Image (cartoon, rainbow, N blue to C red; front, side, top):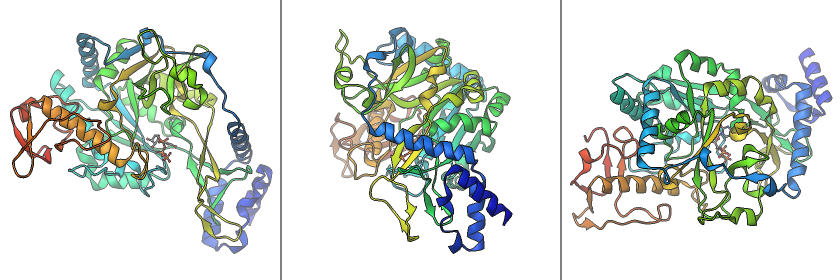
Length: 499
Ligand code: UTP
């Protein structure tokens, strides 16, 4: 009784008493679980959170704030590029990256706390299989890339090296992800080198400023955005773990990019060589009005400017050489030094603002029925991982080739971009290109030669299907040995058993 009274008092103070409106109908177990959830919410913080969500929603429903006149592109001396650099420069950066990896100084950190609502599956996105011939999931592909990279760096420098894999999960993704890894024996990675940790959750808020009940006995909660990383690092003592392992550099990436080059030696080497504390991999925009955020400066400070924050003229502006002035498309793929993360997680994190995400939030209606909204009905408040660029003392960006490095899985196949089909095709085209370059030829099931073909990767399947295990090749390296002058029957899988 006392517990209930205390919670009622807190909710009154927060202006959120509606969260107990079904109290009289709840059994004792349900009451217990609801009280347990509400006890974790501080009255003042809850009041502020709901007020802030409503204000931000109203602000963002108005005309977007334009940043055009305050923007500057990343200066050329801080912008590396795979396409524009000389081969010897790329080789030197790669060498440096390998050197750092071989000395166990590089870790990868996966952001995997998202709910994947657009993809619409009930399990974590990393467990999704996009329909490759091997049936591999995103998690397995990533695990195998780590194993191969450890092997490559180890062989180069005759060391036994480890690239620890930190995985940020949320209440939604932690247990299924852990179970999935256990069921697959951590895909061959040493158990202590995979560190799962959990980000915080925040209540979802209705447009009226009231927190939403998902069930009669459950508040609708959502993870606090991929920028919740910094608080989660501190909450879970992850930076101490990195320090104890001797890690100096961290490559942070999203779960949904099927082409992600984890701990990419070229990117790591570039950032280390430039003495950067914070870096972003970017891709050129596909077309001027593409709805992607652009890495640039605003009033001299680095940030990602959303496409809605710039006018069409600015989006289409070109330099003397014809390239787009604001062309550095953000792909949520970042380099940080451990010292930078310590500083952010320790103090600066609190300065990060929240972004408003308007989403469909399942709720319980006034009659107590569970409802799935057809239209967005709720506000989720999220921090973004890239909002820390402002704290960098030496920020760099590195432009990579989109078809080699970026194809995100965001939507179900009913959408026309960033779907399981486009992700699968992006990977299969890449492997097909690698195989041709290594000197392979393809035949169909009846032994007839398949003509070589180039195409628009995401619009159609390659003419021959070839999937190469990351355990054999991380970015197309070493394939001559296996594929030169080989005639392969499509579909073909090059995996560890075959070599
Ligand atoms: P997205 O912004 O694409 O969101 O996340 P999402 O949650 O996966 O999918 P939707 O918007 O519900 O459809 C980009 C990356 O950030 C991670 C995701 O797991 C993904 O790797 N993320 C997102 C988190 O780790 N935590 C969050 O709170 C949100």
